[in-house]
Figure 1 (cartoon, rainbow, N blue to C red):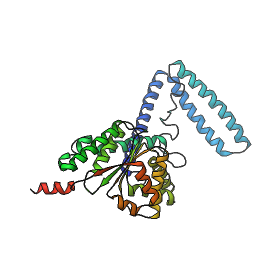
Figure 2 (tube, rainbow, N blue to C red):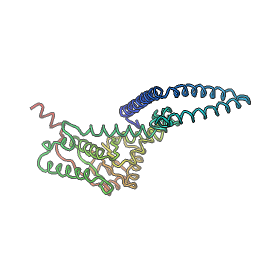
Figure 3 (tube, rainbow, N blue to C red):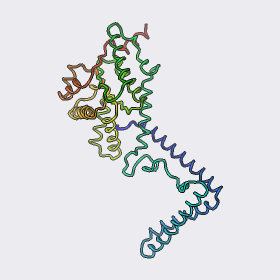
Figure 4 (spheres, rainbow, N blue to C red):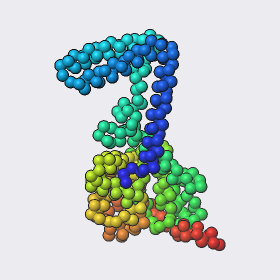
Length: 328
């Protein structure tokens, strides 16, 4: 799925609420204007009647209808000018009764005439997604405090402290000169939690962030390439653009996807495009260097080895430790 359904639904609900509020505000303004300038109520009624007649005459066709359309059009223009003059005379904008939508591109519907999502809806969607990223970082505490060092011991704890320091510096100085990072280590060692903390902090600082599992990202590319449904295609294309062009991409759980020639191609395209655009990426994987080399194309491994700074995660599976602690 290209766009998260729940986040898109929340964005649509916000857009609908904005449209409802705009309509209510417009109705209150009309009532105020008509109360102050009764002549405008009559003018508005006459104008609507003329517009209805204009539509009917245009639908009839023929020479007589053309003359009728021209006559009605002239009367409509004159009445619009009269209405604008009355509004100005009483301190209102000349288009105060037109009910202009917040977004002129889509009329506050959220979608353009070709069925693709409007920029106003996508902006609300990104806000919802970034809010979700901030929520992801909460695990009983906020931000990096969610990473509990007590689950790491000895050298493993020292290693995790270094990882935390690097990630805090990454967030504090995030920009074009930041590193690309590879979080590498076994299952249950805090890679996903730390990547979510980084994602949330960078999003909070105002940078566009995309957080995807590798499988979900490849599914988006697959949908864009093979879907015959226009809505799915447009949604997938938007998501692909976000993946390729966001300031920070978190690609989680690389190696859990089914490796095919298509996923290899999509991964190479993601890495190569983002490097060329100087966009920053964090990859999280359970695979060690040997497994990465065995599973992925040499071109992919070369880019990871050459362009990513590796943070190793060591220790005992934290979930196993928590489970054992509950039974002690």
